[in-house]
Structures are given as C-alpha cells and as structure tokens.
Length: 292
Image (cartoon, rainbow, N blue to C red; front, side):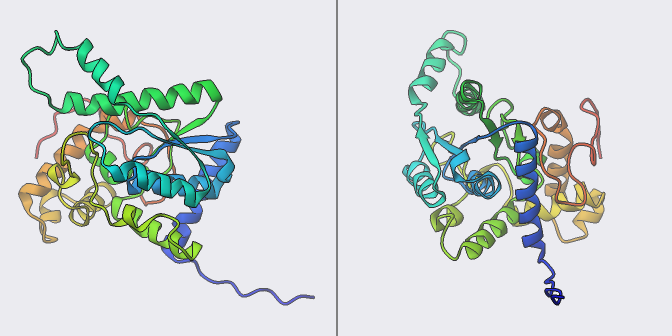
C-alpha cells in the first residue's frame, strides 16, 4: 500500500487561480462551446482573462482580437501580439478607426456644435463589442468579458461595449488582485507569460488622448480597500473614513457603487471568489434615491 502523498495547503492566490480556471472550463464546456474569443487591449485585465482561458480550455480554443483606434497606443497592439505569441493563441487584428469615423459622420447632424465627450468614448467600446459579437455569432465562439470587480463596482465600464460577453471571468476579482494573479501565473510558468510591459503600464481605457484610469478614479490601492469595506463588510461611510480614508472620497465612491447597479444587473455572469460578489450575494434596487 502506497503511503499517502503529503498535502500542501494552497495559498490564497493559488486557490483563486484554480477557482477561476475550473469555473471558466465548466462554464464553457457545460454550455456547449468549443472556443472562446477575447478582445485584447494590451492591458492587464484582458491579458489575465486570456491566460485563464488558455489554462481552462487550451490555447487552440482561444482567439484574441485586437481592435485599435486612433487613440490606441502602439503598445496596445504590440503587447497584445507578444501576449498571444506567449500563450500560443490565434490573434486577429480588426482596426476600428474607420468604423468609428463612420459613426461620428452619421451622427454629425444630430451632434452639431456639441463637443466630443464620453459619448464618443463609449462609442468606440460599443464598436468593439459589436465586432466581438459578430465573430461570436458567425463562428459559435463564446465572448469573454474582461471587466474586473473594481471597475464594475463603480461603473467604470461601458454597457454593450467592454461589458459585452457571455461570461465574465474576473468580474469578482479586484484590480489589485488582478496584478497578483498575473505575477503568480508568470511564476508558475517560470517565465514572463504575461509580458512585463503589460503588468507595469499605467491602466488606461485609451478612448481619448492621454487617458488614464486615475483621471476618473483614485489609485486602485486606495479604491479597492474602500470597495471591500463597503461591498463585502457593509461598513458605513463613517466607519470607512475611520479606517484612514478621506470622508469626501468615501462618500463619492459609495455613490458610484449605488448608482451603477443598473449596469451590473445587465452584465454577464462570472465566478465568485470573494465573500460577497455582485448578483445574488449583493443586489440593491436599480431605481433608488439613497442619500447619506
């Protein structure tokens, strides 16, 4: 009789990575899909999503699509190419600059004399969403949405744009944990599977010139603890402020969370890895008049 093999307790990061892989594999296979498709932006979220997808269903069943616009950095394409090469997945490039211009031209009369704003930013995300869904319909691929919990919490995402998809792999993964998982996966591979440039670059939606996430949100190392305290621990504004955060900022973040339930309600399902995920765990009325 063989002696039982010693068991090693998984670290939190290892356990979460395994949960994401198993959850993705089960969802894809049990819903009858063979392949998945992911829009690759050159950013950390889509890179981690693609890596988990490869771990779940194999590199031959994952297709990446890069869709650069006039606002995309050079790294958006080159970093996506490097990632795809490292993962061994097929990569398609479908530029959207001309499509975006056609939409703007079509709306020129309606938007006459009005400055460009978030409307045009969201329009780019929605063009990309349409293209991904077209590929999904034509070839039967499941679209994986790359949004993380931090962005979804505060509504820093576009309905029918980057939220498009049949499954959201990291929707319950805070942004700071996204980075930990990326570094863990590289250590597991023994090489820079996710290119270092992707991990160290400043987060940006790249929907307007020189855009950065910190233009709209506090740094994620500040945002994530506030979100955890409010969403998962049910702490009040005062209790969160007492943790050392600016009360005005806390109030602003909480308002963003409450105001964006309508977006979250329309997003695809995903894998629960925190004590309280959005959906059945935490659901608030879409129409409300909450005040502090």
